[in-house]
Image (cartoon, one colour):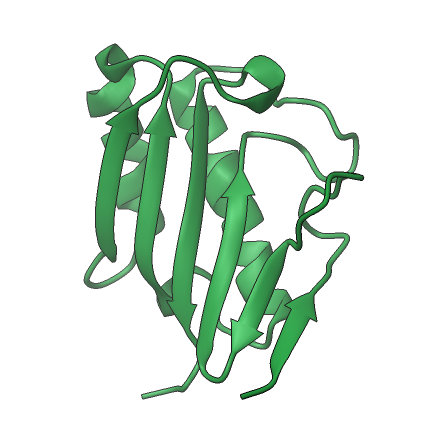
Length: 130
């Protein structure tokens, strides 16, 4: 099976040794993203809801770049949260971002994330259509 590396300027890019996403057949594996504005490279300001929306926008941009339909194609998300006290507010923004049935999800509290952000998510998407 061939695989494709997905690259887009619509999501944050770094010099770190990883791909923004890799497509294997109809499955897309999206790297973890924090609440970073892809235009400035800076963490977005605001509350956990605003930062959650930015993370989801970054994931959606990568799925779009792979030929998918943003968050509608996401099947599984892993949420890394620096403080579970933010869990309920994260859920508010997260739930509002998905139309229809939300994807499967795992949420874990972590001691630290790259860039000292407070939330990061990675995803698996299915790009095979209906």
